[in-house]
Image (tube, rainbow, N blue to C red; front, side):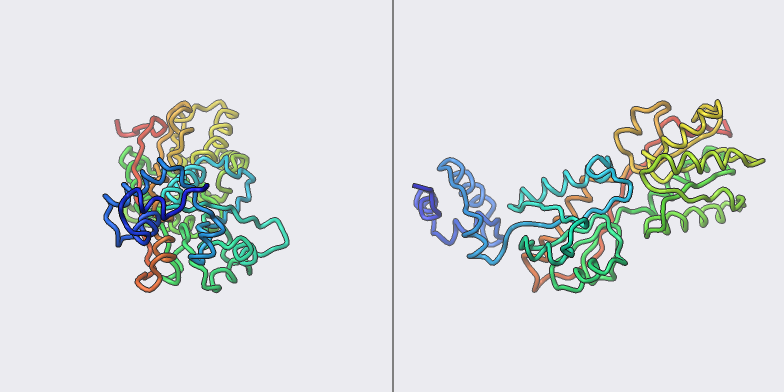
Length: 336
């Protein structure tokens, strides 16, 4: 016979209601009781019935995740992969599963969310101009977004690109560089913030750079940064340092430099962004800003679950998550 909540209540010498609330991590129950009930449930081999839970609570305990990636990297994208790991771990600890929603089929995101009975949605990466994304945001389903502040209509988690890019620029300027080029990603909120900081930092230090030093590419697509770097190398006055949109795309820049028999971090300094594992194992070790992916994932889940479980007391806010500068070896000191 399957183990029931009544069996657990009897074994713990508590009420049925206490067991039910403890298994949901209700704030009405002490952590000591929650731990004791969960331990006893495991010992007895209790397995909750998902269909019964959904019927009783009007919840599926399933979170939908939207991730659109024009580069085709999917879950191999190192920066986002770390965020997904954190989302999955945080959701599982709270008793939720995650389901990726696809933009490849005939169903809209809202139709998929309703079909799967998702309690809420995390939008990690998407075009907010899409009609079905707008439809989802207006549907009343709890949504939490990454790096997109929707003016408190929904909670959001922002990697602090302003602080991150400023710190990266301060380090490069502190190493004596004045001819700094920025190969940026496609037009997104993140790109706009970084471009704004780039220009304000140059202005602060009374530095004028040629318009050719600011050139567009695509996040996580090394071929685009390779071509952008080749254009920079054709200039009469080459930059002394090139900042790339992310660590992975910096590989394209490295390839272009080597094509021209130039050594990265010696003939021209380079810097990335994200702080993925790759940045630590390439030569030279990449100077970069390490985004706090685990904390970003935890905050995305925390914000979404608060809006799902306590809607009457929840006020959408935007959470800023900072990272740290990784100096690496790829930015040489010109003033040494």
